Length: 418
Image (cartoon, rainbow, N blue to C red):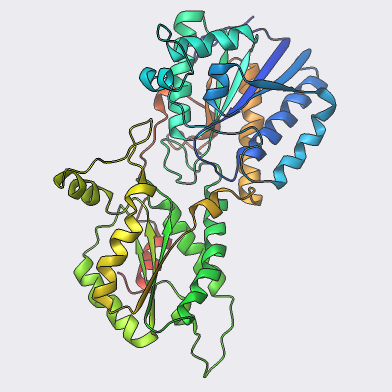
């Protein structure tokens, strides 16, 4: 038995029963995270770092943990788990459950009237004799993992080590340099728009808004724009045909971190519409949300929110809001709003993300064996941004995209927005 300074978690060094769960929205990393973690846990057993190992999966995120819905991965399947690298989504299912939202958990039948979700989850882990649980999810998932880790430490002597894996295509988690799946989602969003932009040839004076996911951070929208323009630069066009690099280019990138003067932008984009016969805008779904919510509340309308209190962006529809205002300003004859989010987030992880996930998974297994809890990632607050188990209390969402990065400023200048 050992105790560590960071987590003061006490676990058995020889026998490990490891659990994994995925939670929150999808991202191109969930399946790969399970594949890499399984690989490095099985290698730890082969290398004699541990003497016994069993691996179980909780189905449908925290819902499965609260209800005891799980399955064990047999040892003869451990090597075959590598096939998960080739698929998107979650092979064990996700859900949106907040352990500290007692009322919601009771209403959904995950715990009884006189129970707390944290205690129910803790008792299930103890009942299943879990030593380590890997929570694979975004800032909400890992915030809940922090609450669970703290609760286990205070109420149950830290008998379960919680090691998180940072998933989110928004790349908006402090203090993590790059979250899993964000790079893949950007590339997939670019591929999505390569087809959608062809709709600009279907009608004169076409306005296309490509809406990318991103609640508070414009990272994904900006990175998708960058990836798309890199792909566009490799495309050949033939004169005198009207389909050109200019007509297929991006003409505006609107993200929460950049204030948008809709009237000024409308005038600038109308000139592009007059010249090219179409306008293409990349819009972050979080742009203008505050204004839309304020307008809804002023009108006495109920603002839809999820279990975490976040505004349900799909229901307030920022794309439709902006398209109506911009269409009249640029004189569009037809407007098309297309959302790449579900397409992009459901892809299998690319080479960049597989490498990042693999390095974090390897360090995560080593951390778990040492009894050190935390969220794995490249720690921006440490010199050299080392991969380590970042203390849960330092992990939080809401990190804005850095608009001062040279590549983004160059992009804005090249499209005439700056």
